[in-house]
Image (tube, rainbow, N blue to C red; front, top):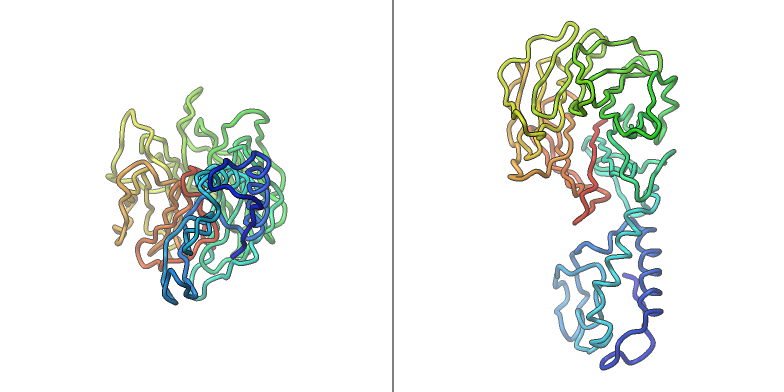
Length: 358
């Protein structure tokens, strides 16, 4: 646990601005290197002292004062009362720093490889995934839209302009057939097993890249940014487009959607996913509800969040379980999926954008 020494007596006097700025700088530098968010709470286990018995566990903020763990007035009332003012800017800087593989992250065993995406383009390992090296990152600019894994060790991030950026061991995406510089209209990406894939724009058109065959989605909402998610079968011969009201529109050789919820006038539908065994798919709403369509069996152990907080969903191999990502970076397993560790969350910051399994 790193500590910082503030030289002076701040029990009755206020801390100078230079000291506050210096503490913000050193905390942001030290914790960013370890991927720790200064704005979060953490579980401390004490070795024992005059205040706490050995092994005592305490939930405390990451940034605390000496008095929180010992019988002392340190760091003085004038500085202790400003710890929140120190932690908040440091947290913002950690979140916007380049999210290269964190040295403390230990991948799980007997778990799926998972990647979560933040709004700035950071891709973070969860489950059994190792850290990912990035080729693109936009600190402070929430332009990242979707993430897909090509393998357990790499994949692609879609930005809002239609750019496709590799990470990990994934190679280039190939030639793009659409790009909207200065226009945030790209919404989802699907990878083709044979290479390349497709991008969905907000008006409902599907654009091939990397040599994938062209697709006509059969829907088009001119001037209306309402398309939200895309499923394309590996053959490229069919699939579905989701609109924000929950409408699921089939194209090509896709079978009938069947009964499922829709919310006319309410842009609350978030994502659709398709089972690898071809037994159907699932629709995620912003409250965490997960609804089968096209013949899929109902999914067990779904955790309903109760408010508009769900960001994305991904299925595990086989399709009998998966994960919902919330806006703060938390992962909720459903079906037969196990609980997994995550390398990064953004408590209090609505930055979660996408989740992918490999």
